[in-house]
Length: 246
Picture 1 (cartoon, rainbow, N blue to C red):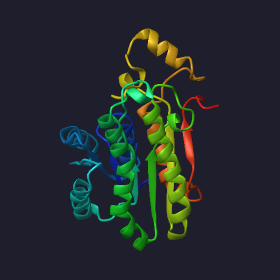
Picture 2: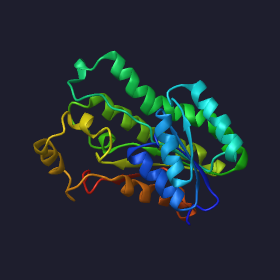
Picture 3: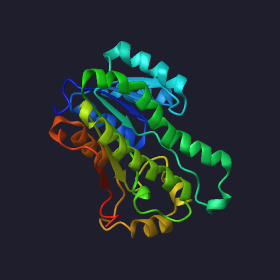
Picture 4: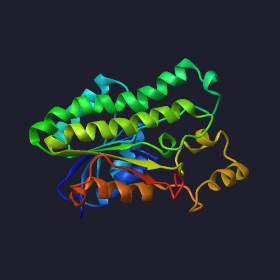
């Protein structure tokens, strides 16, 4: 029960990596709010694991404020915030990605981190403790062609993680990130452009351990970084990628 007595919000927690993190946190004793644009999915998983589910659009400040009011009533200021919600654009040449797709990627992947930080940071500072975990990507470390603007958004998350870590350390708040390689999540077909055995084999050939990241992998890593065992760790962007970035 490494997170016993802790409270956590996991955005994008209804499926994929977010669901893996929410499951791991609940199994380790945390009181978890699963926050997702798919409110029904969030509620369903919450009922399964003994958590709370809520609907939120992480790219909208008013929606986050509404979620914050609900979580405050349920358990007060969270001890842990996991900024997991994310999207990508379909593979394409940099100049062919539409402005609409670009804006959507940066609103969900980047602006959401700003909005969540702005909403919850004052109370975390007043308490003098907290852990923020951003789910970035190996795409921000070792970019692939045809996903330029997604790569850039994840690079932004990595830099934001390190900048926040330095700024917030004196306030007792730790900020880290995880960099997964692509995994068995709803976004996988978008990353690859098409999900065929041939494309999967080509993609897996770039990962020394020969498999995708799993929600369980992410849950284990997130549990450690958000636990008191990692009390001296901040500003770390940990690859969970089977050697992809070596």
